[in-house]
Length: 258
Image (cartoon, rainbow, N blue to C red; front, top):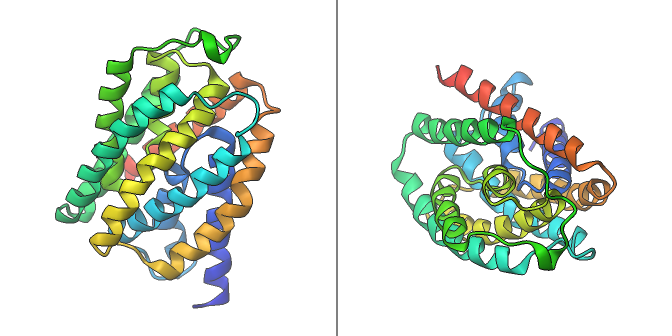
């Protein structure tokens, strides 16, 4: 493998995982379009949508747990929320990841574009802040949380994402979970989701392992750094960064599809 290609993949993995740890997303929202679009710009062979979704699934599995470790102290991990949404997203992701092999390249990209557009729309809608609540004070609708997580799981299983980029706006806007608790808990839920996604992608032969390992190594370095920085940034700033990131990605994907 060309050394410049390795360095490019490492840079993509590092940037995506840094944002993952900082914003509570699995990183696929950033790495999926970067892995699809950037290598051909440097005259390297383009990866297919199926290969990128497979790499993303395995990468999110490792990077999300690295991010959770960064948040393990501070009381930000809501175990009840993680259990309810984690189990539901796990089932949905199994269905989506195994079913993805029957979809075309364009259909996989369209699913990704729809998810990103939904997430961007929810991030733009104003939210009533509840960031001053302690863990014991946080209440949420469990059946609603489970149902939404299941739907997210199906979509994220198809594209190899952990679903954090869509789970976060759902938790902020619909379930009204405090921002830092949302970021930390989302990483844990994303890890659970990525277990199913990885199994599905591995079983259906959709992973390019050499490429995945480079991206994963970069992620293991970058995700904890992002998580540490996240604790020091104003929650409104974090929400703004995530909104811009998701909206920009959604626009780029749909421009390419159309």
